Image: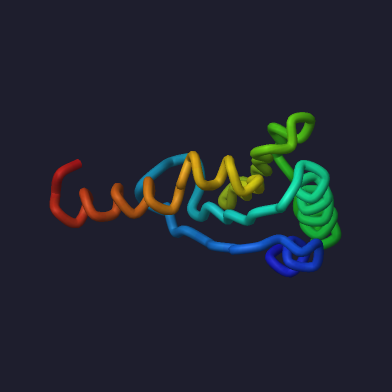
Length: 107
């Protein structure tokens, strides 16, 4: 999956361990594409790689818009952003704050 995203020139690939912090997934994978066309190409490549590995894509959201595409693989959710959307939503910061609060016992 990571290699498929990077083959399409995806940038800043990050995997965030969210296991035990949310029931929706164990890992969030984030990657940036420079345009809507590139985010769609990355999404297509990731989906094809997953299916070639014998796994299924549960669902894909945001493909038509192309600014934030979410691919649900069950235990992994792939987020493919344009630079503007990734900066705006800043999931890395959001999940690091959750981790800090859990460590402090604030949740």
